[in-house]
Length: 146
View 1: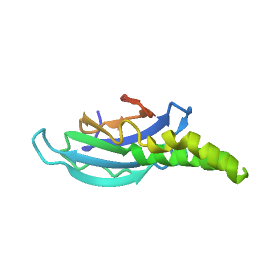
View 2: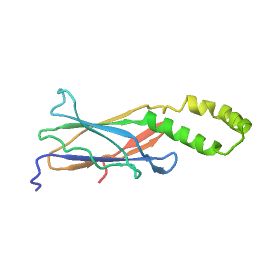
View 3: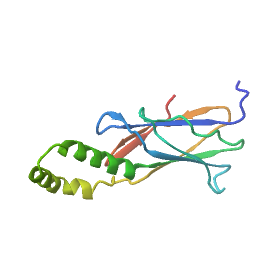
View 4: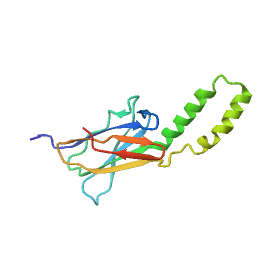
């Protein structure tokens, strides 16, 4: 039997469209005590190079529901700009212009179909809840990990 009175939460994000961890995704953690209570933001973080948030705060005693908010639009926008910038570095001006025209739809649509992902789940005292996010530009999946 656990002697801990509060639950804890961790998360990580894998970008399944590239098969790698999603780095620098902003994440906020909110909690409430009961289904009708107001959400209280407990803290904000960002994923590291391994796609993990290692500094999410502890949950207050009495927490029954938790919400993780992932800001995915900025991540996808940055990933597309980084890929395009890396590919056109060292090209001639005419090559850069032609490639920029090809990439215009990607840049215009660089916001993910889901610009943010909010995951709400119930917690029980004394347990740890690891909630991974599998992400791609047009979908996502979550599950309770270990």
